[in-house]
Structures are given as structure tokens and as C-alpha cells.
Amino acid sequence: MKNLFLMLLVFSTFFSHGMEEEMASEFCHSLAEGLANESGLTGEEYTRKYAEEYHWCENNDWELQEDIQP
Image 1 (cartoon, rainbow, N blue to C red):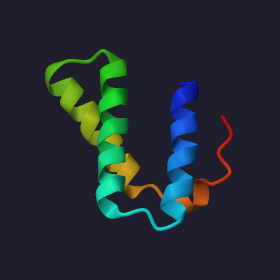
Image 2: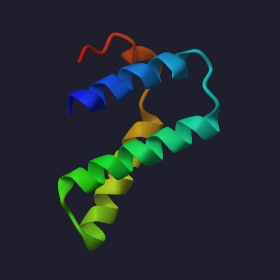
Image 3: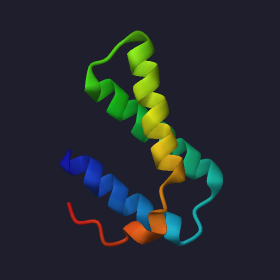
Image 4: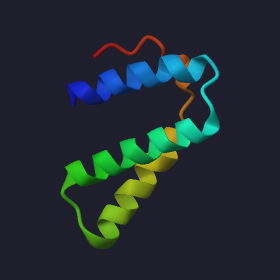
């Protein structure tokens, strides 16, 4: 979980400096996949968890998250 917060902090720094959408999409995919895998879910539950996390990541206002502390 500590690595997740560090990843979010690094990502928010890049994103606030004009990170390209493709890189943001790749980041959200990796984050959602990691969280879904970590959940231990399978099948439709895994797919639902992945979709929820991906949607949260893409719709998060990262510029407001610059002060995230691990």
C-alpha cells in the first residue's frame, strides 16, 4: 500500500505538469489492474473492480492531490 501512495504522488506531479493523455491512460490501467489483482477477486467481480478503479483514476482531479503523503 505504501508503494501505491508513492506511485500516486509521483503520478500527480507528472500529471500536473501536462502529462500526455496516453501516459495517463496507461497509468490508470496499471493502477486499476494492480488493485484488482490485489483484491483476489476473479471473473466478473475482478472485471467490476478493475472498471471501478480505472474510472476513479481517470476521473480523479490529480492536480488537487499534490499534497498526498505516504
